[in-house]
Length: 496
Image (cartoon, rainbow, N blue to C red):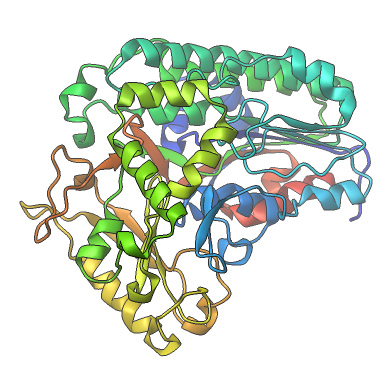
């Protein structure tokens, strides 16, 4: 890489900030620092693979690879060799900034979701300081001399105590919002200290608080949306501090960071995906596929003693009152709850009778074909792959409520040919749900399924569009639309 050694890049990620709300608040003069940055640069659309899954967007940005290559689509990933799920760790990802470090460029990275820690000697790397997406469940950083700085910068969200709010609890929502607001200020101060003390030529700073708060508070932004025509949500439309207050504080902290940099610094403020109305996420694909005869659960006799124990655990978990679940997640460390959750995430299937099955998801529907030659216990011949995918797509697109409203907005087939699917780790079909899926007392026409929702504490889910406001050399590098997988390469060109 040819370098101008006087050049610097500051990239600021405002994770899951919604572009339409950013534009609105800029027009209404509520985000003065972003407005000033935009006046000197330009705003463009970012396209990330949120259509595959929210878990795919950051690995795509980090590696510069498509999800079909890196294989990450969510926090729990399917392992065809063991016919089981494993928690994503990120250790096998190679981030684009490794090349920068190898070229002698001092790099600083703060809290990029899904990031691996390389152990850089110069600059800084800090992971899971106060994340929204918990991967390893522990703070990691390098070099070791950062310990006094990161250990004294305690974030209100780092303990996990503020993560169990729901739309029916205005006090908990207010506490969560206040924690996010205070956390932004603490994060901003930490970022300022890191930039001042470590002086990286390439810095990538992430504000995760918008992501956390927007999942819980989006109903306060669009209170009239059809998804929120429910008593338990409508009565909680006002929470203080507001989500807009949180956006405004991020803008303030961006302004403080911009004061530290010189005129030779190229700047990019971006979000890989936004936020939209929702209420929880549907969790009925597994029983639906069983009812349709496409999947089959193992009976009690077929299960091992360990499998029986896991089945009992899953049953207890489903029937545990919400108050006890909240206490459980508040008391136990994230790493412990993840380990205990793993055996119960997937039903015990009779693989000899299962042609396709659903994978656990917090937004889209994910379906994997039990493909012979790919899955260890696969039964679907390669020549039947396309036909089965087409059959599943037709069945999904035909799903409606009892009164005829469509439940599915779109179905994405990630691979057209079985020969290409063999090496792929992502689901074979991605289901994008329509708003009718969030209706109270949902009933699906033509089935006996009694749908249930998960993560019902969430009133916002990821939207597909992201944005970037670029200034300086970066404004020249970017077009009007940029793919997330290209952003690392383009941002790095600000150092040339």
